[in-house]
Length: 158
Image (cartoon, rainbow, N blue to C red; front, side, top):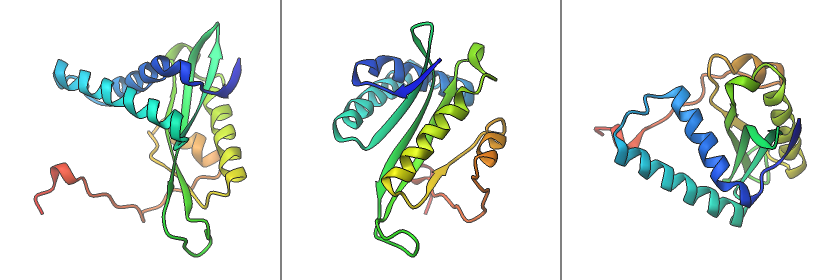
């Protein structure tokens, strides 16, 4: 199996892998219009990300098709202690098709993403892990923390 950076010509395959990820993780029965909106917005995002390099995606290829993915989204904030560049990344879209799981593909994609983050001088790589994914990330040196808080604008009454 080949692990490599995704190419712009693979946009549709990447979008489909993200939709599969959502299908496994959340109730995707929001109505046909909502799903079509999400699909179109995801396609637009990846198209822009290939042009402006704000997201790097690695894929595992087997039997001539993409069977696993993982992405790093780059963000820049003011420099802070320990990170004078202010560049960090968020790891997401770690997904392997069911029939290709337990073959080390996610680990290999994660290693490529981490190497890229080191080469780019990122201060931190963030992620949200599923219960199944936590052992992989912990074995790669990611630490759980209770420091992270989130405000979901669309659901806030404040």
